[in-house]
Image (cartoon, rainbow, N blue to C red; front, side):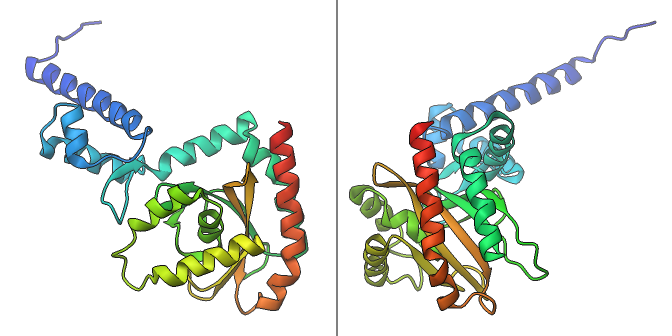
Length: 259
């Protein structure tokens, strides 16, 4: 079979594409260490701001990189966590695997969607979910990212975050419209005292949520949630489920410590 040499211009384009892929992977590794600004990324890799922005835009389009809505800094995206979730499911990740039975029990008790969220920069990320079997349901969606200051899940995480870390994080939200920092601080104090959080329609209109922290050394590594429509989950309904969800969170904590 005859072989044909590639044209020089085709070889250059291929080399350029490979180099872009390599640089994109390096950027993801760099962002895995923490949030970075555009100028910082460009300087680190000796790129022009335009080139760095082009690479970041491509990575954002695939979900491998996200941008903090408040600070405008870049971070690892939900696509990475979706990949990790698949790996976790097959390789027995501690948090996701050890919480699964508790999630199923809570679904049986409540009839609603059960989810687990973890802190993710200035946001929270859903890493595991079991959907309700009812016709009308609310879900977060694995890989979904939401502001950490909105909803029961985020507030349960914030309330059990180390104080200095929480204060630094809240400073980033000073210019967020309609966010009352004083009210939020009081809510977090109440949540820390009660060890649970309730929310109604804060993030999704018509939704109701009960969340409790999963604690390791008194710091929330995750939030365990019951989520459903508010017409089916009244405040009284959610309050009746508090002992059940707190019990399951305690079982998960014990399993994680023993793992």
